[in-house]
Length: 224
Length: 224
DNA sequence: ACAACGCTTCGGTTATCATCGAAGCATGAA
DNA sequence: TTCATGCTTCGATGATAACCGAAGCGTTGT
Image 1 (tube, rainbow over the protein chains, first blue to last red):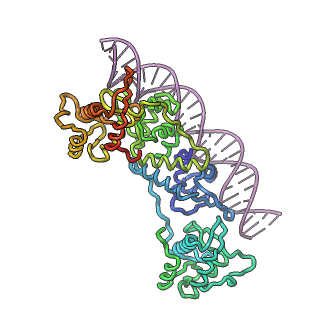
Image 2 (spheres, each protein chain N blue to C red; image 1 turned 180 degrees about the vertical axis):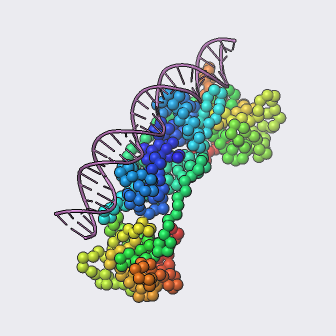
């Protein structure tokens, strides 16, 4: 039964930690639940077998996310029922201050805006994503040429995929990496839409006023 | 946590047995779950404390129902999640053949049509129901006078409430009892809309063709 | 009044499962 | 290669809770 999976306190803590749609590593989920990694591993495999979460291997880490918005919906309903008969549990917000919004991940855009950009591109069918692999559609090709003056031959590069999904530590959701991700970030800089922070070593990306506006026009979110 | 309540197999069986909106006695729920009454009692008090079910005392029985359509919704969602990862449990339909539809409960109408009638009256604000108590509204008074030629003075009767909710064993939902319930049933008989079955001892109520049509016109269901 | 019935409460037994220590396997870095 | 890290598997321990028998309580019917 799937309800018994959610019933366990440790597993419930893990699931609520995943409720915001981000992915977390097994260790982090263990810490969220206040249990050791061994115990967490057992719980995670059960949750995966129950179809509530999906794993994604990245390096030697193992990220987990909720398989589906439906799962989040049921969990939310469950929390709603719990709310009116007793006390509900509250989730503390994240702790990072500024660079959640936009930063450099190697050479491409990460953070809130990076995730938002890929979300928007996926929703508009500019790209098609299957797990880790992202491919550019015909519409996407036209979009890039028209709005950002990026052509396909600019993207040709040996030994590096054009598109790639990258999972980063702040949003824990995918953003666009690969040659395309790097090229788009470079274009943003050239257009003076954004610039890396001046302080050495900082990975923060500052968007200009017009840059923010133009970015929103292209990849504006419909609420997230 | 509310999920742990649903997590237990015995309790899950009880809840799914209640999913159709009908109320069941503690003993029947015990049999549904395949446990003894003692164990069932423990489970039921926990479910009640969790706000998932509501009790209703009737004689020496104790009927339980889901507190809310929301509860049923969450349960349904839970079952949906379980359906795609594993096998879901199916619920066998009821076993009664004919008199589920309409029968005499003491002196008033019970069964499917009885429940449907009260539902319709409640929905049209002809009556207002608070738990067990039902009171006739002004619209209800006009409705009875116009369509069934029933006036309030016909209902006056010492030591018997005008309206009362009665829970019967086939539909396990409320139907209308009290003086009004009896008077309406009597009126149906006078109008040749319905008649008690001829076989002695039978409680079946047979509706005539025109009776069925007129009844549907007054209390037609909008899907239940 | 007494008996039958439905349900609850009280103890004690049993089983399931969460939990952690230690060892085993991967992947990435030096 | 060798080491470190992240995660999993194995085995044993422990606590939570489901379960039932027996007794108690309230209601209904005779």
